[in-house]
Length: 381
Ligand SMILES: Cc1cc2nc3c(=O)[nH]c(=O)nc-3n(C[C@H](O)[C@H](O)[C@H](O)COP(=O)(O)OP(=O)(O)OC[C@H]3O[C@@H](n4cnc5c(N)ncnc54)[C@H](O)[C@@H]3O)c2cc1C
Image (cartoon, rainbow, N blue to C red; front, side, top):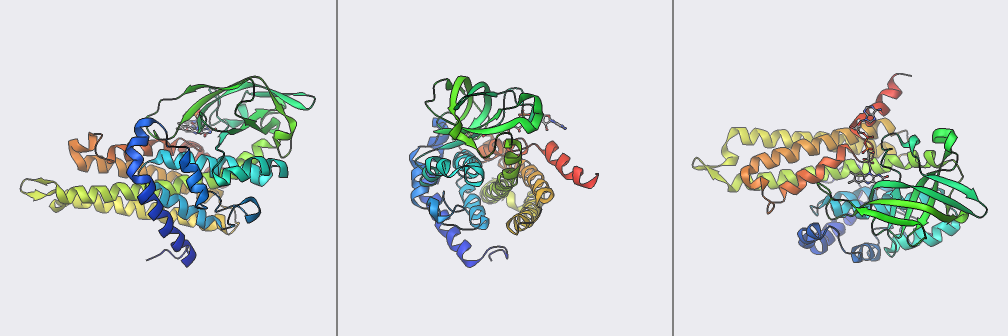
């Protein structure tokens, strides 16, 4: 039965995304994980099918659906079993492009948002630096005013799509003395002299997505590439965090569900002491605990999503949902490996990947500890 939050049109969309994922993504996941990236063509295909434009208006090539449609897309995408694929598509569509759509000039929208929606351009969001992660205000990449350009110097770390992105929405300090009030966002294009990829990073999980360390050396960026107002970047970054964190929570729930399904399947097949594991009460209770955790995570995440969609203050609920859903994914995928025994440790079984992929959830997009700070700040003024 469909959840009350979603309407018939959302369930129709769910069906079509599920069928696309089953046919065009799932069969290739192992290969892409090994290659360390999925084909660029997948962005184009997702664009062609209208998925990258779900939450954007028709005038930019989108379909003008609500965020519930976006949520359905990300939930179903997670069912491909490779969080790296979801991370790559998500970083372009739901993390980089929203900054341009919500705050950028019409010119930036035409140059970058429109081709992101068609899948012709890949976007990335570059905030984190080698010495600035949770503490966004302490970024050290500078953009010096030089006539009609900014001159950018610095580096970025752990950037999803960073290696092959056509543009990076980059957080820079335009007023280094002003802390978080001196941050701006610049769209920096691939091929701009002085901008390059220092390294493609090797990771524990999310292996089908590329993650880059980027450098900027006297990189001249036209002022037309400034997103919104100078020195308003910190506010813009914070504004889109709710959606990014909701997407992470939704995907954590979907990935946990996938791990549970694998564990149930395996527990019914594997025979020890003359009976399937699913007949042992210990295993049965583990499965019941996993299902209960997932259901609680899903309810909390949908509650946060409902507030967000209604335009209410969702920050506390989103932070709670991200913590609970991502911690649940860690626990559930770990238990799924345990139920698989030694086979769970082997690369030929997907649960090892679910376990590795889940681990980033409590770190990326704001750590569990930072989410708790957000929650408590509203409790104690
Ligand atoms: C695979 C991957 C993809 C990523 N993609 C992107 C991307 O596309 N764009 C981007 O900009 N960034 C990206 N990131 C970076 C990610 O957002 C950061 O890793 C995250 O914000 C944490 O920052 P950090 O790694 O520097 O950890 P730190 O901030 O150094 O934190 C280390 C530990 O200290 C804790 N801690 C820090 N401050 C406090 C505090 N005040 N109170 C209590 N505990 C605290 C943290 O919770 C954590 O446990 C990605 C990271 C990874 C691993």
